Image (cartoon, rainbow, N blue to C red; front, side):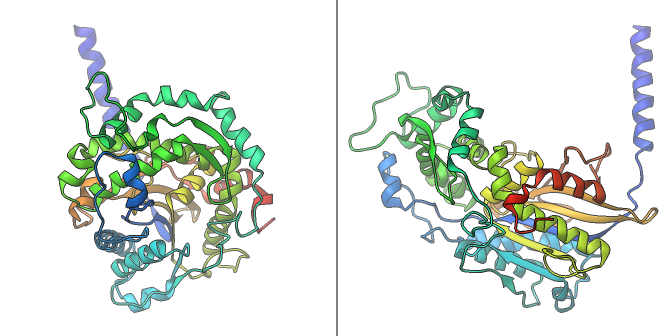
Length: 435
């Protein structure tokens, strides 16, 4: 007992010593790159298709055709307003919107959903200024490098790369994810999860959870076709949006899903994103061009010199890129970034959530460092459209950069080292900047 007490005392003293020994953060924020996902939207598939997969009709959203919902727009403004507070506290913004707008660069993938999201975010961040959101109706090489002709996807290699992760047997996923598939089926066909045996498929309906899972060649937008698993994703896609958009509880999975249940079904959604965008070959092809521009933008800000391929100009303090969860997943896969936030599965790209790259400078040494985090509203913050402040922030996870971060609380990475890591991660044949 005495020895145990001594060990506890020593452990307590070491904990206090380590706490006191934490280095003071003497860094100053010089630039921030916010890479965000679109906000809460209507389902990807129309109800005419979705209703083939369910015993009951799917609820009707306030908008159709995969657009940002009004509540989704409100949440984007709330998130933008939070970033305004944080960046003003950090000294990057002044609070004078018209003046601050001259130092920001916004770029969105050119779909109405994503443009609307960027505009709503800008309205929350700089409410008294007119912010130009850059986009193109053509394939944007930053977000769609294969379609734009910057990168070439070898479809046979894509299939082999994914099959190699699955031991050559994609149908094994039906066993590995049996609980999630069972939950999805019980919700879609409106019966208790513990009902044994599970009831037959209703007449005239399609049981997407029973469709064979395979890996076949896809297209530039969907690099591999996961067949039955892709059908499952289409059927369960509305659930997270129903909850986050604030639909009545009776319309969230027809009253059968809580936030926890939605999170469990989302393991299937994240599985598809992981296979299609985090698989190393696919991440290299689809995300190298974006990574190259992100890195060059930070180098430009640090050196003050115009850098080919950088976004904005040397005086740009804030870069906001708005795209899809596929884009964020791919970039995270390229750099092997992981995170987890309360209420979500690991590496989930939540509606409106963002990877945040901070370029900071030590005031003592002058060294530039990169600090990464993942920021997103929780499911309940989205559902309730909760006001965010510095005291009541969104969920924030510091992100470790493999091969780069040093061992401290902020997981900082020296910029020079980050550039080195990026050069090894980026596939030069999949970027429009070869050097």
